[in-house]
Length: 238
Ligand SMILES: Cc1cc2nc3c(=O)[nH]c(=O)nc-3n(C[C@H](O)[C@H](O)[C@H](O)COP(=O)(O)O)c2cc1C
Image (tube, rainbow, N blue to C red; front, side):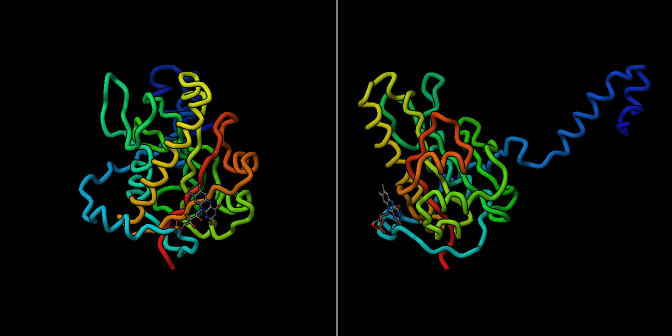
């Protein structure tokens, strides 16, 4: 029997039936961070690195050290990619422009084992409105990500990869086939933001478009109608 079955609260009220509910609540409270939404630290809006410097330094990085990242760094990268910066008529406007403000992209984050302080290994989805993460698939998926990317195994060294995915219909339902092109353009904006933010944080980013879409989607547990477009490993250089 659950230790909570005879908890003072349940017994005092003669509410024995409450005990299983209390036990469930205690179980949920004790669940690992993966089971809940993870709030991210608010983004730093006062970077001290000149834009021209990060533009000049940006390069595709293919070697990473094993050094981990902080939750603030992860949050800053996710915000740069697709964070909310203003509200217009109840709609969150983001760090990237979007045709008709349809925002057809989603940012997934592939976190390695002991790679980001306070975050268990897994694939997470960035929730821009609440600036938080929701778990999609637990466990270290970095090898699977690299394997699905035609075995570009260097990707698995990075503590974190951001994967830009599209749900085309958010854009095509207004713009038809042209919405596909608009979605790809938007992915480019998000990717460049990730590159530049990584540089400004003293990190480096890579960019990968060569992968087997179904294999990558399966590896990360992406929803069926979310098409992966770009994967961007991020970390410190070796
Ligand atoms: C859409 C796209 C897809 C890319 N895919 C890969 C890839 O799969 N693997 C890789 O190592 N680099 C990839 N790259 C990086 C390019 O090779 C790189 O940007 C180019 O060589 C110029 O180098 P730089 O980014 O360091 O300036 C990709 C770049 C873009 C824009």
